[in-house]
Image (cartoon, rainbow, N blue to C red; front, side, top):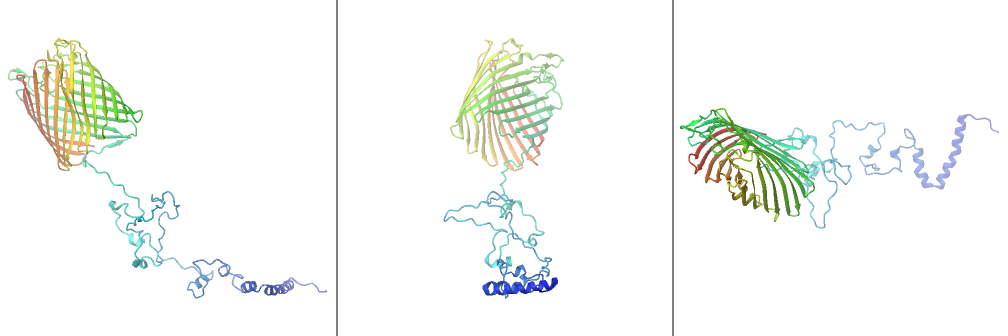
Length: 575
């Protein structure tokens, strides 16, 4: 019987008992013992086996088990050996932008990641030369020591270099394409400012000059004058509906007053010939559907009678001012290429009382009237460039004073009908032209029917990129206070040519011809106006203008003809 043993002797006894088992493994499985026994029994630092020395580890492309390989010793480096320092080594930049993104959608440079599909035999596009283009075979060795293509240049190649010019933006791989800028057809035109969803343009002109006959009298008397002319334009920028406000006005002041007597006769011109002029309208459109629109307009006209007009009474201290304001509400319906529009109109005209040179006041209530009417238009689009139309209008005028100061009842009914077309030929000739007939019948049987040919047109011909021709014509039936005269049939024709001598220097030539037919007493007036303007555009916001104009009034009435020469120099400030 064995005596008690200590703990140390017990461990030795167990080890000796395990040796036959190891021998049995060697006998029963020689291959297994050949693999495990040398590694398990080999004494190594820190344990029996290092993970990198295990013959069961995965052999990757970055490891080697060949002792002849130069990297073999590095792989079996002891774990206590420090890693090589990165100080002084140039980092490698080899990852393109969004390299870890998926292959659908867009990456951080807004490029699509979906690869295009090419048909068999279709040539694939070549990449543009740039940082991402593979280097030629002869240069690959110098581009990267590992033989890889450099995606982006190292910092040493781009340091302290000027930025890429805007004209080259979008020409390199990895950059979004650059959108072309629209062509600026008017490099010196007003740009305007946005207020919410409205584009607002404003301007003011200050002019001064000399008029040899501002009163348009038979015996001329000259006077210096000044003009202040503001302008305002606001246009909405909405997806649906529209609103446009266009307001233009002026005030002309003269340096001295005209004497009441000219060659012993009372002058037809007032002593104070200052006069205002304003034209404004606000147009709106409500898009009920894509083919149904509600249209409306508010308008205002403030002015005086034209100098030299027979409606101006003798002995006036100043021109009486009149105002015409009104509105139109209509409906525009499209049926494929057919467009039908109709609207109701209302206008009111009021006159200021006349102030005479002796201080008395003369009423002009007999010249105030209301006009109610309706207008309709039908057009058909033959082609996108030609759209013929037919338009008709009818109205009635009711004066505040049924019998005027001369004893005539001037209430009347009338209208017009015209046909024409709007066109656009290669964008060189655009506009509208129409011909028709107008007439008006008066309540007083002593006043005959007023009728005549109606012409209206607005044409713009772009002859060359530097030359533009414009032609406008209007026809109207105007009221008068002359005894026995039904009204005035007025035709006005204007022809204008604009030519750019330079982009900043424009010459303008204008010719205006007008006829005034006073039906009832046989009076007929003809007006001629020849005007030349020179515009020097210093900047978009500052223009300098010069004007020379000759006005001629030729009348068959005695002592009614006149002539005048106007010289002006001004400045225009716009935004």
